[in-house]
Each structure stands twice: as C-alpha cells, then as structure tokens.
Length: 292
Figure 1 (cartoon, rainbow, N blue to C red):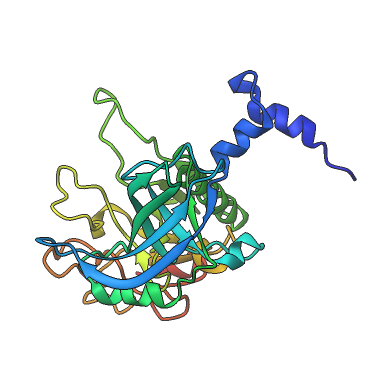
Figure 2: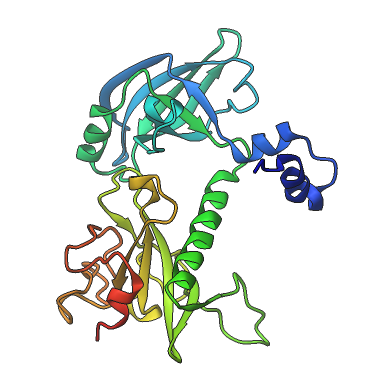
C-alpha cells in the first residue's frame, strides 16, 4: 500500500501556515560540513584548564549563513553520512572567520574540557573524512528528545503500563514542579521515572544530569526525586526504541544501585557506566519494577 506523503506533510505543517519542504528540512536536518584541514596537536588555553585541537572548514553556500565565531557543532563519522548510525566523536567551535579567504578556523574539544585523555581518545577516531554537523536552528536536539520520549511511552504502554507525562512547567497556585518526566502505573502502583540519554562523547556512560536550580548544588540528579531512570541507547545502537533501566538508589544501599556523586552523597554520579545486564542496568522496566 502506497503511503500518502503529501497528506503527511500537510498534517505536519498545518499549524505553521505556508511552509515549504525546504523550510521543514532546514529545521529538522543539521548541515554536514566537510573538514578542510585537521590538526590533532593538543594545546592548553593559557590560564584555563581547557584542552583543544584545531580544524578548518571552507565557506560555501551550504554553510555560509551559519559561520560566525562561537558557533558550535558536533563531529560525526563519515559512515553516518553514508547511512550509518549517528555518533558524536567530538565537539567543534568556530573561533575566527575569514570570509574573503573563505575559511573558518575552529577548535576541537570534548564535554570534559579538563580531561586531556578524553580529547586524545576522541581525536584517535576523528578523521579528515568525517564531518562537522551544525544545527541550523537549534531544533534537532529537541526533536530527538521528543522522539525518544514518545518511543519510551510506546514501549511502556506495550508492556502494560499507564504513562502520564509531567508538565514542563507548573503554575505556583496549582502545585509544585515535578522534577521527573513521567508517572508510570501498573496494578494500581504509581512510580516516578526520569528519561535520560547516553553521554554523546563516550556512549559507554549514561548522562544523569540536572540543571543547577534551587536544591541542586551540583548538576547530578538526586536519588530521591525519581524511582527509576530510563536511558535512551539511541546514540549507541541507532534504535530509537532501545532503553536501559535502573533503580534510583545508591549502590552502597542496594547492590543493584547506582554510584553516588563523590562530594554530594544525595546525588547520583552523573556519568555512570551503562551496560544492560551488568546488575544495575536492565533491558525492561519490568525487571527493575520489582526490585525492592
């Protein structure tokens, strides 16, 4: 049966008026920019605990609207451009733009700027044949997050759970803000679940982070806020329906728990190893639901 893509496009754009396919593509699809030169020599910025290598790109019609000092992107493998799994190798930032020469100079770094070893590891797998991916309008990360959460809801419903998405904001006269993403219910029992992702620059680790707000002296999640973590494995497997589940409890309290943050014992370590079947992470919520 032939799918009606024209009708789908009309449904997708109905709210936004006269939208062209090119506009929608520009919002959803980051630009892949070829690397012109790559210098893997690691230097430390004077007066800062920050390490970087360097690269250049050529300015062309595909990217000329995006090049400005300070613009950031992600280095992704050539195999992704050819249809493989998306993966972040390292991060890139434009430092200077020479429009007359048509060249942009930039720095290569990782999320752990203070760890030289992380940058060395990233550079070992970065090739001049890879690409710098730049999100044109800042929407791709939000779209991916939404698709992950939608897929999680479908997976949980198929497993017999009722799922309620918590509001992203809360008026003070209604009640307190829920610092978790979902209420999950089965057999009349309601639990709290937080959806997270893998760490982009090293997908062996989960990224259990929280914004620095009142009650959060660190960017690590608190154990007490949620009952379970659901970590999307998309950055590792390329399958939007793959998740790892863990109980939000300290490992010194329960053997299947997660490690504590070193300086803030009420908080979880924000980058724990995440491997399904290791005794902490499981492939389904059913497996951790029954853990006491």
